[in-house]
Amino acid sequence: MQSKSGQWNNNLAFLLAATGSAVGLGNIWGFPYKAGENGGGLFVLLYIFFVIVLGLPVFMAEVFIGKVGKGNPVGAVEALAKKTKSSRNWNLVAYSGILASLIIAGYYAVIAGLVINYGFIAAAGFVGTDPGVVYAQEISSFWEMTFWFSIFLIGSGIVVGFGIEKGIESAMRILLPLLFVLVILMVGYGAVRGDMPAALDYLFSWKADQFNPGTVQAAVGQAFFSLSIGMGTLMAFGSYMPKSQQVSKSSVIVVTADTGVALFAGLAIFPLVFFFALDPTAGTELVFKTMTTAFAEMGLFGQFIGPLFYFLLAVAAFSSMISILEPSVVFVSEKFNFSRFKSSMCIVVICFFLSLISVAGFNVLKDASIGALDNPFEAMKYLADDFLLLLVGTGISLFVGHRLQNVITAEATGISNTFLLKLWVIVLKYISPISLMIIWVLGNAQVLFGVNLLDYILI
Ligand code: TRP
Image (cartoon, protein in one colour):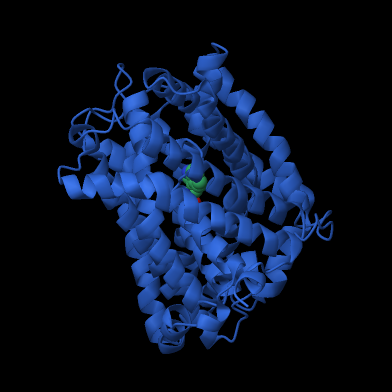
């Protein structure tokens, strides 16, 4: 995938790597449960809205920094800051991104570990089991969860360490389409077996009364998370992009594919939620419970399709995890002159400890709330997805919009239409940072302190 000169050999490589990064647990586990937790309709519509209005422009901005800045995320930002005579402190944006990436890796590995674990249980079959009991049992053991996440974490660390992206590319070529097909099959199953009208109504109806800053922040956070924005992944991948590849066109493709998978995952899961009268607000366990119920229902067929589902989900999570580790690994190896492998192992050790904290949130520290956040797992998730990603997204927008004017050209971005190019810059300069900051302040006030500031502003 990457040639010696640090560049991808073809345009497909970026698309595969970026789609492999974007499509992951965020789509199939995260999107449906967050939609459920936030009451469906409004959240989903806000999510789609933010993907288009903020997600796509900031996604392009991040890829753009990588493509023109080159090197690791911190290096890319510093090089561009120097070139444009901007303050070196812009590197804070990249450093915050790397911090976010470590925290995300810490909890992501835990969910992926659970997915692998479920793959094995699914092979034995779910018939006659109670999904709630299965789930409770699987998350109750600190050491068992640690075992599963360690396999996942070490596996991804080794792959990143060897830099064998080549293998990932060929795997993605087959597995990504397979995942698409399986998700569509599950939608079909939901339509035939479940309650599709209830799901459609739940996911796409306009529920104005649910409007509050927390929901808006969750929708933007989910949009950024799902698109892999805000921690240097896209800068790293952008830096390997061939000069001739268009940032704009490739971004549109990746963003569309990612959003499509998320929406389909919702359409696969919610018909079952309503048909089996499960609780849509169940949170992180939603997908595990609905899917187990469906596979149990399918009998022998479920015993075949169940493990396949978890396998593909694990693969999707694996390609995302690699992309989560990539920025920090490249950074450490360039900064400290470590070999890629050594640097990858250092990052794995850091993530291991972070994962231990998040595993504890499922069992031993289940009730150890941190402020308004339920447990250490929820706290890490909030800190990374909703808190840091929005901050870094703001930083990226401001940096590209205000500091890189002279570097932005139709050729470098791929946007040949001058109106669209101007529009992109205006979004990055004003619209994106201002709205992100408003959402960030209002959302944090509500989620962390229970204060809905809108009540004070709109009397
Ligand atoms: N987008 C991935 C998912 O949906 C997760 C991910 C990979 C990510 N790289 C990222 C999230 C960078 C934020 C930033 O599962």
